[in-house]
Length: 132
Image (cartoon, rainbow, N blue to C red; front, top):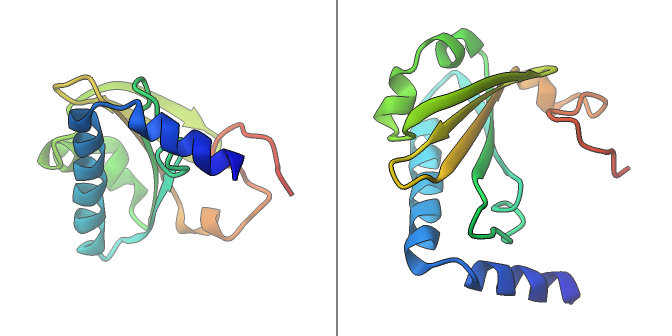
């Protein structure tokens, strides 16, 4: 399949160090989210989800939670996860994005939204075209 070949070439273009860093951040986020009762979903989106990251790719996740203020107004959780410095906060409709940069420069975008976002297909987390 052409798409699979492109994804494999793209992943191969990453340095082994960057690949390991991406894998470690995703694993760390996943372990952390499993232990939190207020988190009902953690979605990996973007090029990493498609297994097609480029050297300039960031990690994009959507965090669905019953306690949005905890992740929007408190930065302790991001520090505990080693996400780095908060460099941008932006609203995308129902999603509030927090963009972090690790010490190596890897970007980690965490979109925080309500659990209902996962149930309403008419609400798009970012300004992306519908593919229905």
